[in-house]
Length: 123
Image (cartoon, rainbow, N blue to C red):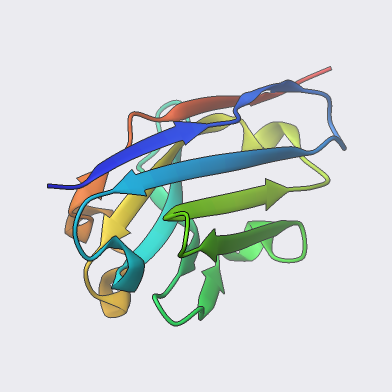
């Protein structure tokens, strides 16, 4: 069984920064692909950024150059550093574990989810 616990969300002004953390526990976490997904009001849950067990990364176009995903395998923790935040980044952000990197962009293939953390970008 895998447990994912997110932290780091909050209210930030446009142009500000936040860092989200996802602490994972359970077997085989270190070799699994992990991702940050978000779901805004009325929208489907979508991949924001993903990172493979080997460190390959993938970003959705709207966040490229602003967000950075990283992982500390020793601590079983995945991070999402978000810079230059915009109001359209407002959403609930979820950490997800997907067994195969190939499926990272398919939210319905995520095997484990965290509880989500709210990010609100507003002046």
